[in-house]
Image 1 (tube, one colour):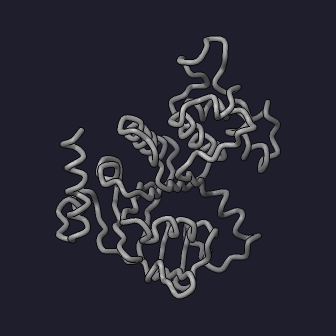
Image 2 (cartoon, one colour; image 1 turned 180 degrees about the vertical axis):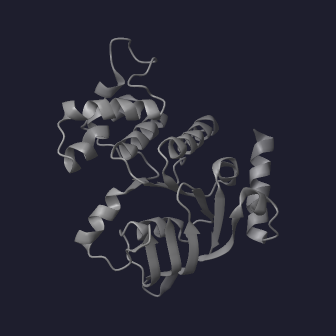
Length: 257
């Protein structure tokens, strides 16, 4: 369980998070929606200690992590897997080495020792250990990131994140820069990964379509405050103006497609 209590974050004179309070239950997929600059990504970074709160409390599985030292925060971060907007793979490492990186660094495994887990994670993200569109005698795991498509890089990034067995998955705009078909695939992948690995997932997004399709609950932010939260059904029934606007945009995109 993740618990935010009256969370405040400031940057100079600007208050980005203005007393946010909500809970993410174990095993839930919760989408954080809102307009640009409303503090969605800041919220995730505060959870993992990349940014520190200026007020309020953050608890993970009942443990107050708000004021932990950098050293004491390291075990918390290892329980959290964060997937950023861009794949952020190491260009000089092969796909296998990218996925094995956390295992080699934190668990002191050799690449050879990590390979069973690498292949398991490639299968989890629908790549299976090789891509049939490549030359038959060339394994995907031996390729460099620049030699595969952007959509495949996104999947490899997900595989790298789940390789170390996080209990919490955090996604920061995971479908940025993807076409509608690949966006839908990544959304289904997030849902399936969360269910198969039994993790708690928080997804920062501006895409109501994605949220309606795979979220257990949706939290809508505006100007650093929660303006609505609830199940998909509750969001669909909302009378909050920003939520109505988001729903109208989602409907318009569906009609266009």
